[in-house]
Length: 315
Image (cartoon, rainbow, N blue to C red; front, side):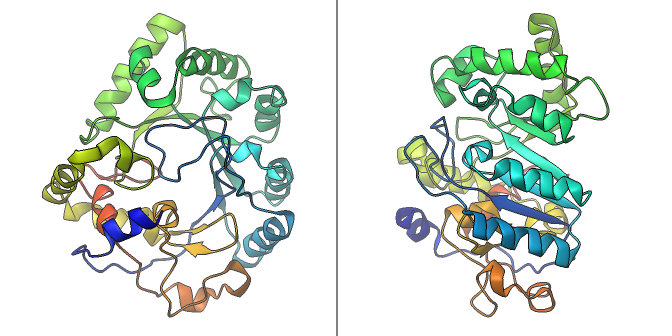
């Protein structure tokens, strides 16, 4: 990640500050059953970084102390962390809403066959990555056979109520592989909904679009188009997105307990400002709540066009 950091060190992104904390996002580690071309944390089967039980307990203490209402779990494949189920159960016992950022395919892997039922039983919200509704596009981005497994998983999720009942929301996530901005979110959602229903009898709750950040593995995809892509992001800057940026109302905890303003800053090795504690163990809401957010050039990805966040388009 050092190459990413040096590439992003200098920035003319506007200064922004935090608002009230609403969402706690936790990166449970970089271990993943896939090695997607757009992955900003370079996750994959050979990664060994995983949040340990001690840090998970610190997360739970944080949730209790700060009265967090939403816990957003990401990775890697967050389900591959050995403490994933414990964390989910503990959070749900406190009536905390839990989001699982799922790659879908993990639910078909040996040892995870009952994971979908576990998520449903605990009414976990699934936010699932499906870069496109066309097989070839998904193969290029995520590997051979991933599309077929993703479709099978979505059909299985529908059968247990995900995407078909209000109790079990199923959100799909679109990322373009090419160095372009995502299309208008609602229009693309209608395209996804029609195609998946007609071809695979699949239903989902909503679709969100994410802009690929020029960090992590996606830098390798860009190759000699890095400069052009950054120019596109900067020229597409939309000031209307600034008030809704996810970093203004959530905080990210890395697998080792380090505090970041967002998961993209985690990927770029940019923890919260040096003026405040860097680890969850020393978290002080009174200090962190008014801090200036650490920014770099990749932040232009969140403010380009319709905007981009963990919740999709911003305007």
